[in-house]
Structures are given as structure tokens and as C-alpha cells.
Image: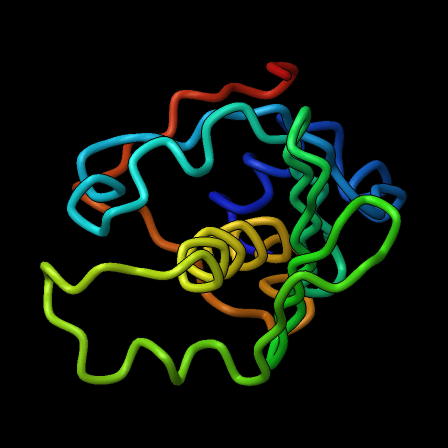
Length: 150
């Protein structure tokens, strides 16, 4: 690992700690202008996401709505909390082809866009260390963590 990656990993407990983490659970509200442009407004407001750290997998629970979505590369499923299927799609990324900025998203597309981002972010440390990918400081990103910060 290079110096920047070492600093980031060390600031969050070190490689040994990261290797022990299998998933992260986050309560979130994912909102903003893009969701209204895509006709999904507050569709992801007040959700609970459990994201895997070793593989790209995201489970999003919708408290009070009796539903959740399960995303893995190549497939997304919307189901009730008891497992009853609401809707599913294989190769959900293909449904974005030909869309314009104003093209509305359906429920599967909104969940897919968030799932891909969360999955990529959560598996990045493992991927970088596994591949030996270079990590560079960008003029758009300033690292402020110091060793010992958590």
C-alpha cells in the first residue's frame, strides 16, 4: 500500500480491523435535487442500509413500509420483509441505457444507483489492497485524517 492509503486505513483502525469487518449498517436519508429530477423525490428518505465490505451487496430496509431491496451485481430484488417478492430485475444497469437527464427512474433504478455507489465505496479498501492499485491525492480531495483519528 502507498502512503496515502496507509494513512487512511491506519486512521480507521488499521488493516487488521478492516479485515474483521464483514458489513456496515447505516441509517440514512438519501435526498437531493437529482431524486426530484428523476421523479423519486424522497424515495430513499429514512432508510437503513447494510452494505457488505468484501463483496458488492447492499440490503436497504424501508422502516414502516414493510419492504426492502437486495442488490448484488447483476440482480436487484424488491420484497416485503417476510420475503414475498414485489419486483425483481436481472442486469438492472441495462435499464439505464438511452436515458436522458430528465428521464424518470422506476423504483428498481433508484435502488440500483445507490446500491452501485455504496457497494463500490464499501469494497474499495479491500479492492485496492488486493490489486495493489495506486492511490493518489487529488486536487478535488484533501485528506484531513491524522494517525489516531477515528
